[in-house]
Image 1: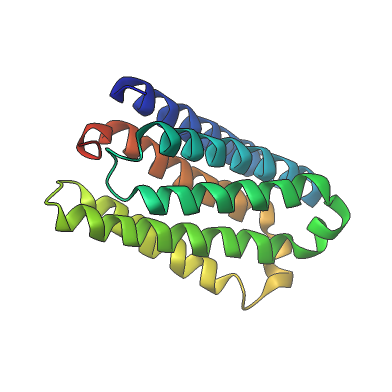
Image 2: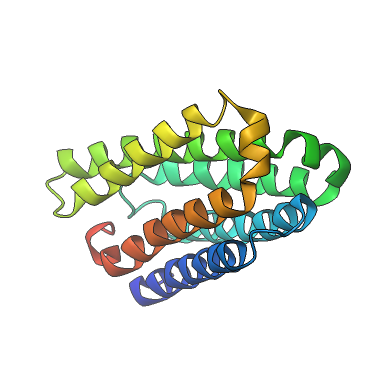
Length: 177
């Protein structure tokens, strides 16, 4: 897969996550089931994009192993959200927190790999990784409040996750050898 196609896929994944986040923010009264579906579809697409990019460019991509882990976790969590809706409603705050926590750790480790290779722009990924990790960790403390505000929380955090993918698209040339 060439560099342009990789950047385009990251851009599409970022735009879809941002769009899903805007929908959640614009309609905070959405039922948690609808948020679970939006979140599940967005996570599924972004996970599949990560896996496709890993399969096509893992030999030339810095931090490829973390991209693979992030993709697998996104796909697994999205399948759980999409096909176990009743349980997803009860566990949505926990699943959402786990997604952010794992994604944040993945971004953080990947940013440190980029730093060690001297790639400019690694600090943006480090900042996003820290933010995702902290918010994911904090979501475990009050799951009831998290469920009540899940529309706004999910919307804002999906926009941040989409920003991470857009950063990959913009700085994509720096990740490929």
